[in-house]
Structures are given as structure tokens and as C-alpha cells.
Amino acid sequence: MSDYITTYTGNHIDPADPDPEAISIRDIAHALSLICRGNGHVRNFWSVGQHCLDCAHEAQARKLSPRMILACLLHDASECYMSDVPRPMKKHMQEYQRQEKGILKVIFEKFLGSDLTTAEIRELKEIDDALLWHDLETLLAEMQHGPMPDLHIKIDFSFRPFKDVERDYLELFYQYYGK
Image 1: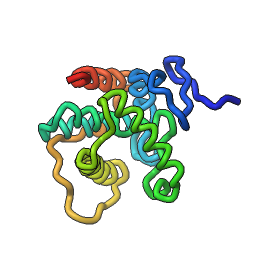
Image 2: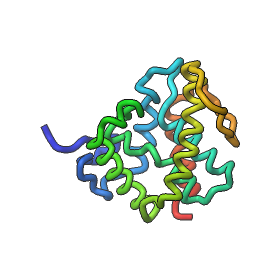
Image 3: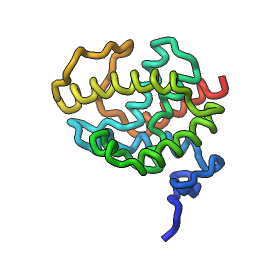
Image 4: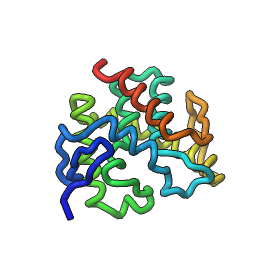
């Protein structure tokens, strides 16, 4: 057994000590298009990639900066190296949270030039939480408490082919990367 995972593009990543040079946007887009939200506990397949695209589209609709649009697109990128853990469980996993923060820091530094500020994290969390509220209502038909969060986009929860999600993820990334 090795201390690394082999990615879609053939890179080797040690999730506990990721080399920024081995992190590839192609790996991120590919893997997130294939990972189901909520550990698969949804009415139809809904990928983490689709969720990230919606977060980025919401940031676009709110007229946020290119940096914030990319941050929204990349905010779950650690899951392609660590897998997704539902929030109720994640809050009990301090080491997982520490590792996730470390990988995201490397990803944000590589693609955004620096880690997110406290204000950017707050803005990202607001968008992520609003989309999660709608995910739970629609994908699980689970009534949420409190007022429905405002969204500036309409979410299409229908199944999309994995390759289409991967392509759209990469197109949106390159639309804003380096701007």
C-alpha cells in the first residue's frame, strides 16, 4: 500500500500532504462530476460538480468577483481527494476538518493565489448553505426550518451526463481563471 492516491490524470496525491504541482483542475472536474451529493441519499443522482457549478452561477448572478466565482466552483474540491462526509458527521471529525482545510488551502493558493479571507469564507458559506437548503427540499423532499433562502438562479435538479458536468465545470473555470 502507498501513501498516495492515483488520480484520473495519473497524478499521485498524498491527501495528508498534497503537492500543489500534482493538483489538476481536470482531476477535480472529473471526480466531482462522478461523486454524488449526500452520500447518494437523494431521489436522483446529483453530483458535487453540479452543486459547485450552481454555487458559482449563484456567485455570478450576485455579481461577485471572478475570484469569488472560482472560490464557489472550487469550494468542495477537497472531496475529490478525501470523499464527502455529510455535515452531521463531519462536525465530529476534527482531524478530517483539519485535513480538508489543508487541502482546500493548497487548492485555493494554487488557483486563486491565496487562501480565502474570513469575509470570503462567510460569503461562500452563505451561498453554499442556501443551495443546501434547496437541495434538501428538492432532492429529499425534506421540509426545512426557517425562511427559504433567496437565490438569484433557478436550479435544475435533473440528471446530467457526467461528461457534460465535467465539461461545464472546466469551461467555467477557464472563463474566470487568471482574471
